[in-house]
Image 1 (tube, rainbow, N blue to C red):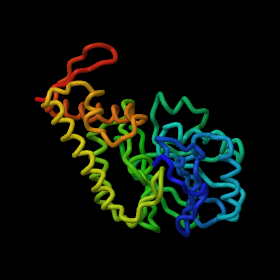
Image 2 (cartoon, helix red, strand yellow):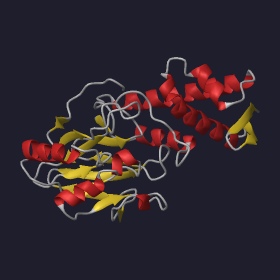
Image 3 (cartoon, one colour):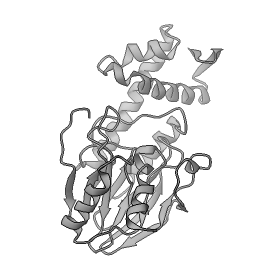
Image 4 (cartoon, rainbow, N blue to C red):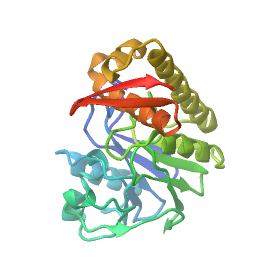
Length: 285
């Protein structure tokens, strides 16, 4: 997504306005998408960006121009990664107290100076013109929620599915087996569109979900082949299979490779020998 040029504010539908978090980069593309959702004067705000300077004035402008109002309603969060929750304190400081809901992650949530209301799978959030259903979608993060927009049969996917490229399964809180199960669950949803947290909207949602599943399983096969050929460390595996990926992304790719290896270990298909605090050697079984 690096270099993808998009406006800082876009209307994606009658009830969805995207406001970007002004944090472009290798992992965020043109910036984290935050969303104003609803047709009334208090739209829900989904995610809050990273807390970058300029985001609050941008949000104020979007509220005035696209929503005809001066403040959002309640705040929902997909997960605790800093580019999604980092701007929450600024939002509350500017617009005043309001409910901020997310699935708890004890030990991580406390890093941000925000009072959070626990959310869970199956919770429903309403505002004028919009009804959001929370879905527990672990894999990228252990506290990850997606939100299904009933009126549009659209899914806000956070970091589970991106508008371009693929997501990282990080060492902390990530789980490849759970991630694949999440993708399988999303295939069963009644969907017309995906609104991701990075990149453009997706108009063929089930095709994109299947593409993600096929990509991850193809990577897993490549990893198994590398192990069978005697490539036994994560760094060389990344070098071998991520040949078309910028080297700046190799550390993130290494986290996803390790997530695959841990899944293979749980399945009895790979074994690990620890060789030190920062090194592991792996073999295929």
